[in-house]
Length: 80
Image (cartoon, rainbow, N blue to C red):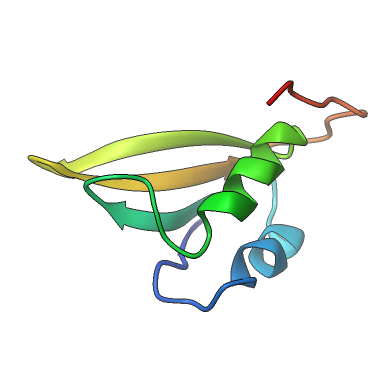
């Protein structure tokens, strides 16, 4: 499932992540550069090994920034 939270308030990323299943995609920003209210939360979740961060080109110069929910990580932490 793909969930777009670009227009949601700060703090929504963690709420949505807690309700997500492995493989779900959370679109947390769309634009030229990765920015927005959810950038830090997405980065922290990636450092904790809970998501993969990827970008997808929408059109020339515009990208969607996504967090793909991982399965069980068994204590995995990424060095960030």
